[in-house]
Length: 383
Ligand SMILES: Cc1ncc(COP(=O)(O)O)c(C=O)c1O
Image (cartoon, rainbow, N blue to C red; front, side):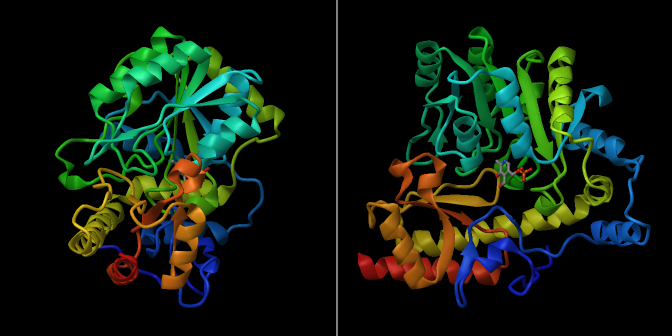
């Protein structure tokens, strides 16, 4: 099991934003002590002067091996481009492969940075909303394709596994989406940053979009060690771009921005994670899915018909509170009253998600239990 670390007095953004007595369940960040292999590798690295450094020899091989072993994805070394984060790479790809005013499609509710990548780059945002069918958020394929045709969509940003609904998309779902995109010449940016975080009891493996067929000319896979190993602070990510011409455009863009590469500590931590971190990750996953049971048991016992996602992947639980609240403002003041700080719904697609919260369970069982109790008891008082 993962080793909980109290982060209230640390630099943790997640905990700094929570006022005294408030439990934070917002940003996608874990409260577990970093794996020994990462801490030791970083300690060793800071014993050297932190001048310009070569990348560790084992960095790329460790990543390629990990992708092959755990993602069934045989990545050729020359396909891999460095990025200082999945989000920056997403912004760059939108800027390189679409023009101002052109349409980019997403499937809300979705991670806020997808929305920002479209809006900050002045592209036209097209939403094909996921549909709740009483047990899982589903893709409306007919709507997705029609919107692509009607709006002459140029790119699609896909989240696999999906933040915030926790879907681990099936091979069939991925294939249908990618076939539609290929048919209509739509580039696909697939964010697989949560790739390793899925329920071992799911009964199927998480599938990497790039492995479901030959989509090399339209597909960009973005991933990192940062969600699996809680390394968001070291800013090291991978853009996997099999098409040579596309890859060259990406590499040139990064050079123009002046990014020659990442910081040394990011490379060191990422290499250690992929080379030696598997056992730690499995412990964290065990803890996360045990925490999910705690959350569900408490909330569903109080409200058996609560619309709460059953996690397939990620550690983020999407909960519908529309039975009690009509706006984000109401949800915010309720959460403040009961002393929890989740992520609030509107950022995932707009006002229609204002009565949702996203609840991060990658913390201790005690915190999850306490947060769930505050939520259940607070809601009961409003029944
Ligand atoms: C789906 C998704 N993509 C990207 C990120 C952040 O990526 P990065 O820190 O590498 O820019 C997050 C963080 O929560 C995320 O959930």
